[in-house]
Image (cartoon, rainbow, N blue to C red; front, side, top):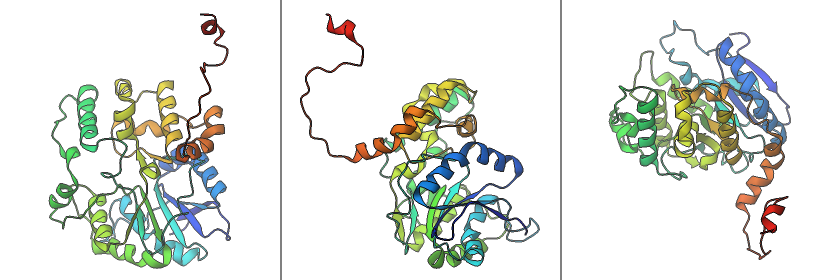
Amino acid sequence: MKNLYEKISFSKNYKNAVVVVAVGKKLEKDWKNYSMPNLKKYCSINKINLILIKKPFLEKKSIFYKSLAWHRLLVGDLIKKNIKTIQNICLLDCDILANPFAPNIFKEYQKNKIALISMHKNLPYNYKENRKKISYYRKLFYNKKLPLDSMIHAGVSQKYSSNKLKIQKDYACIGVIVFNVKNHSDLMKKWFFKYKKGFFTTGGMQTILNFEMLNYNKIQWLEYKFQALWANEMAWRYPFLYKLKGKKNKIILDCVNFCLFENYFLHFAGGWYENDMWKMYKSFKDKTLLRSAKFFQEYLKKKITPKNYGRILPSNRTDRLKK
């Protein structure tokens, strides 16, 4: 198909590429308006190509046509055939916002493995407790009929067993996948054509792809900050936002900005009100945050030796000094 992809920013000297799938004029427009600017800056800083997939790889009449989420499995094959200078790819969902000063995701990548971020392990919050918060707040503010014991609470083993799949040790959100074109493109293409149109699992494409990738058994787990999930972050940090039901409000922008300030990639996965918040504003425009974003990430990793500077107050707090 013609015009299947667009090179947003490209250099033949760059061996790595971030590839985003945003099919449809509205989704493409939203991505270019809200997500692309900071992601483009991130790629520029780290010398990474940025490519947009604009159309599905197969026509709907094909017996192998499946939801657009499946089509990411064919990205490696497309790149291998058309852009031979690219060696490694980071697949990003279009509803992901990037901290432009985040570390290069390819820096520590091991090309013999597929890199993922776990939804269950090495989290900054208690997974089970936080899922209860999400379920309860959604019922309280979004849908009174929502059951409080749905599959949102499923653990790793239950996600596989409910689909009669061999239980794996972990479960990733597939909004971020890093892989090597030479080592994994054919494998991912094989996974795509293994399942025909109409194939269904209770977890959608994510469950079956988790099974295939973890069963492959060559997985590199990246730190949580490379895919902080906004639904989890909001329940954990900003539960008062549920009351807004996704309506535009500067408070939402501030919360998203500070959450992005503390993470690398922020993923708005899902169909609830909170997951539309990525396309409400052009986020991360706060100059104070932008100027200090890179230093902040370096500071968090720095070993601190405390020093006694005496009493310290905010600037211009002379009223306190007089007491």
